[in-house]
Image (cartoon, rainbow, N blue to C red; front, side, top):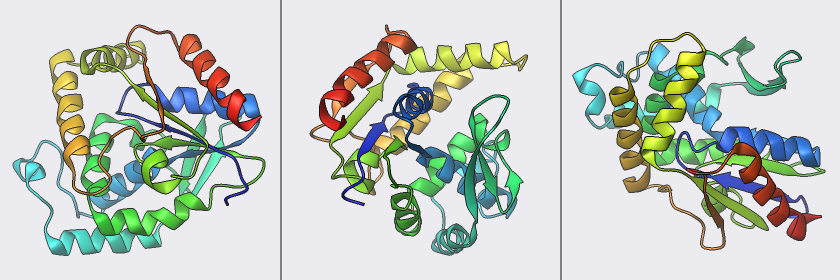
Length: 239
């Protein structure tokens, strides 16, 4: 794996990591790892299995029991996950035990489920090898929260993409409205702030920039401007 070039793109939910990662992977014609999708997949699957309560239940805010954590870890080792390119949208979509969960894992509830399971140390251990195995020639662009700090800490190119919580909530609100889905701006902002709090303060792999990462605040930047910054920076190190 050490001979395979890796670009890591970490950052909070809604900062634009997924879009930038896909653009960068396409630019270099490299493989793509959406690590956040792995945790969303596991979170949704755990909810379906009755291991995590619904987000709107009072018990969701409580810590998961040892038994719940053990069962979720076991579930993580049993899932068969494959990423495929949708020929129409050109987007990367996950097949989980041969079932396409692309729509289910892109909900705000799925993001909350992901944050819950990602805080379990044994789950992160179970998914670590799976993530590392995505590093194959000619190269990999890895999108997540601890790609540069833990999973691919040896990567030569590390990006930390962020934006204000308000900006990220506004983007998510506009995405939902454009899809014809009703949305509440205040609820979205609260959801993002809650997740930031959990991700930044968890004891296992907290959301922080790698010491050698290029930090980009996308609050006032277009997607093209962010993409150009990443490509300019990465090209000096991996090409």
